[in-house]
Length: 350
Image (cartoon, rainbow, N blue to C red; front, side):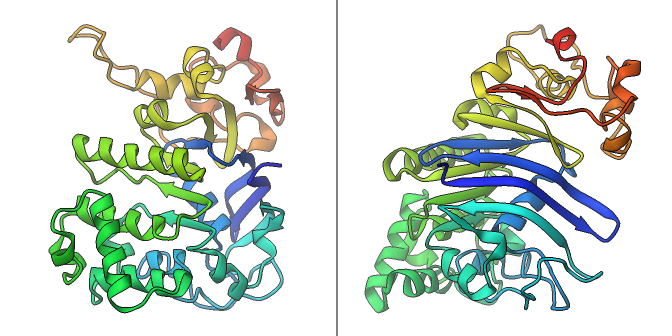
């Protein structure tokens, strides 16, 4: 059994469906990527798994102001009713997210808070809005250590300094006394990673963890995440639009478009033989050093808003250069075994 099994996950905000039947697995010690443009449902999928979406009549879950604390199991999330179906002001979440035999979507808020930080943790995309601006860096890290590892006082401070040193922050003892606004964007991102790995979680979800970093620091962070997977056996769900990151760290890749998985395969096979036009478009949009300086890129035309309903055909059809009549004759199925795709023109594309 995989450590995490996501089955038919659906998330809707009123009439808008953000995630539409997503399924994938993450095994212990493996890195699985979720890839796609902004708006494809990657981050919403991760927030649903972590239980951080606004649901019911309560206030929205602290995805921005105190997201890192919530992911570590410190700050309580918004009050949530036991029923999965939410009111108009919240998200309607259905499906299953089974972590080590337990469906996370069915857990009450208190149980979910105990698991966040110790069993599963998340690195958020925007470090400035994810850290509490009026609390020192040291306090935000030691809260995690105190709650989940029972460390207090000097022991907690020493461990917090070790964590900052581990993620490459210089003079970590001094940084513990500083506030988020006193750090650079890259340092704030590394603080989030330090909080996430403080308790060596069994599952780590990283939502664009290298977006704010320069190339050198990005390589260091990816090496840190790879080391965590290899030495601790941590399962890593990597959410990114950077296919270079995917090639360097992921074992398997799930390509999302308009809330659905359109292709899934081992990373080498996906890069060698993509079978969905959207995957081909993502690969064709990457600048390559082995091409001439005057070789143009091949961008995907249109925008993510140019879609049709899945029940009417392939949502990517309005942007696809290989569209055929069969593409808009009903809902395309996800077919295949180890390499699956949702395209009636897959053989021609390959």
